[in-house]
Length: 228
Length: 369
Image (cartoon, rainbow over all chains, first blue to last red; front, side, top):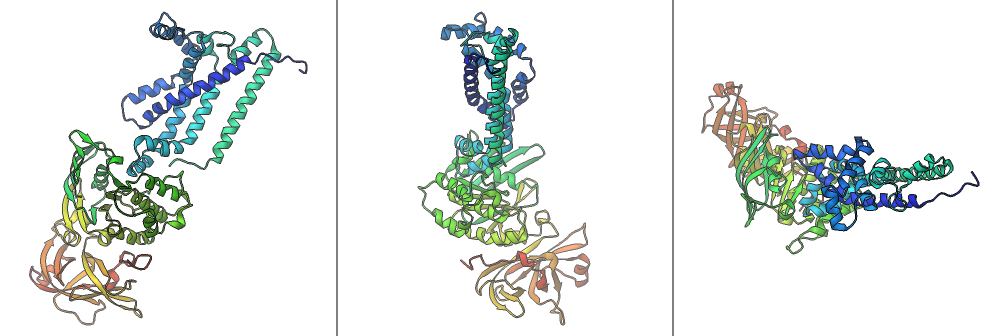
């Protein structure tokens, strides 16, 4: 292995960018959704919960297929997007972000919802009785108490997006520098029997994933904060 | 500022319907058996109960109306929960600061150090909620609520989760709140001891309805509300002043206004006002002063009302003594044998032992106020 070539690391960098942007997008969108699910008494709750969890059980190719159809410039959404931005959602980095956000949605929402439910209404009522408005109470009481949930959600979302394959392949294709992520690159190396390159990328992913999870669990143990 | 409520709350298995005005000073006890709707009413006043319909008006402000719902954080109410609800991610000091930062500073009144001093909170500052005892936690919670400078203080069974010893440690602090900070308190409890020691007035709640409202002594002396106190615990309240101590025999003499009563020694100085709760079942009646009896408290009085209970062996008797009212629970057979009737002079006998030491009033921790 000493004379092994260093494979193209572009896809790795693209993957990390995709995962980072997806995580930020989901943090912004997933927090209010998780908050609503944790506190609503609406009958819509079960429906929304089921929809949110769909990406967990749906084969990525099925999800990718529907997204491909939905994103296509011939469809309503794809057409609107094209006329609004001048580019398509299919086979672009932006399209990948939208697809990844849908694909990884449950990994953000479920830990957050669980954390918010564990915090409960008690501390929020206490905050309100101390003149804290809803946003104030959310930021100063609910968020710090749900910190573990946030860490779990961020890590799972990031890691899950790194590992995605089927959806990306369907929606993004395999365009170097734009949509070719590391999992597709590995697949390609294997297809072309370039096991050495596949080894390097696979090992990088393995070490990376393990390090991130280790860091999270260590961090979690250090945080003395428990909800309730 | 007076608080008036005209409320209806419909829950799955229970409905509350209360029309009541609450005084703007002192402590009003919201009292009654469990499940009577006390906490629901208190939560509705705080704005925690979204299903409340009707009207809540505080002074000039309408908090709840046909098209109006003022959220809790704009009502200026403080709420002390049974389970304290300190923020676990903050120290005791952090919890106090949280309230103080958000307090309405424009309103005249007390300062951070006043609250900390009165509740002896400084030694607890660095500790987190998990490192505080139940009583300490509740003291910090009370301090935190005061520091938000509420205009109305709502307390929901704040002592219910504490053991008797801790309870009697915190009671004096609560008793001093209205005078020290000028905030009216509505205090939910089902403990008669707390009502006796703390309250200026009672609003009695039973099965979601306010069945009685008025002064503590007069309300507890009513014989027509058996469900409110429960027959076992029912009793009257006597108000008096400490007249003297007998250190050797560990007794305190309390002057009821012309007549006196002996109770187990309480550490209060002569002249201190005390309220004594006397359970009806601890009071016996005699036609004359008996001789050679171990019972030392003999109060001359007159029967003012009698309520025989058709479904039990007992009758409730209301006696006027020293200008106050005392309740006795005796058998209907005794009523017959002694031929008791309204207006008849009697002697009420109360064993000193009947006064539960833990329930007696005590000097505040710092020795007086």
